[in-house]
Image 1: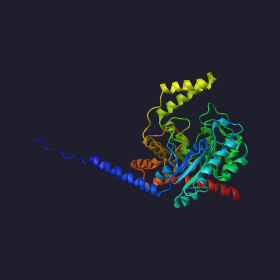
Image 2: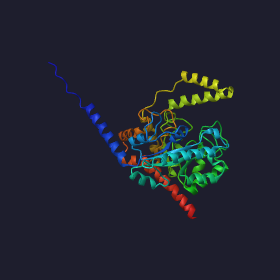
Image 3: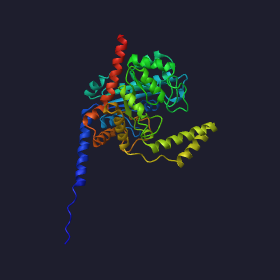
Length: 395
């Protein structure tokens, strides 16, 4: 006579374990200062103003989803696009971006407040508001005039991404076809020194490796990479080599991990770079934008992007940076929400942030580690930049 075997307790135990991890992740998010150093929501707002208080059908960030994701602080990027490449008009666009950010904050005084100092974040969060800080992505709006940089600081800019997709008058980009300056320009060096004097963090996301090296030598404050990943895991020039990860960490800096699949996943990276190469090839051959668009549409149909990678790929980059730098004190979160088209499965928008915390707990990160990753590391670097400014001002 056959006996029925008892059901294995393992599936239920696994479910209970996941439930406990999820509850711990939610508790952590209620208790700690969670901070993201890069979202391009202001550009979305500038193109088509919307009510931040209403949940949007598209995009990644709005107030309901910020609340759902229990994000306490968000750096909004004042991004300037490449059409102003070393030409007039960038200052005007940059000012429009800064105005858009201030409008977003002023329209929601009960929910948002501008953070100008590292000590503001915890105070604003304690009031139940979301701290909004400002970073300037692409130094083009400075337009070779340091007075503009000083005015940006007065308006709340607290980090400067020196370049974007192309070289500019400050230095070389990691993604332009060839270096122009072979590092920083003379004016770029002046900008780094003035950022140190003002207390603006220097962001080395997007810049060429030689620019990172020069900034490490020149800056008297630690550097931040506000939305960059590990090149060893995804070989894109936009990511940072292990050598640069170590050097940034040794100088007290922090690398904030980006959620863009092109910088997380090698298959996505390869597909994206092949698309860009084909676009460049056609632009050298053709001058009709309609024909270029038609051919690129056909290329995309023949070579669609691969499936979205799992959320764990973000954890892979965080764990790699911790291993290479030897400490959990040099990594954080810089999602690039509203600036990227494709993110990992499970990270569809800012409301999903606790899922990342749950995954990191599952990987063995402790609560104290997550406090550092989610905000303390970045605020340490910001405070160091402020101290540098204070010492220089006193001197």
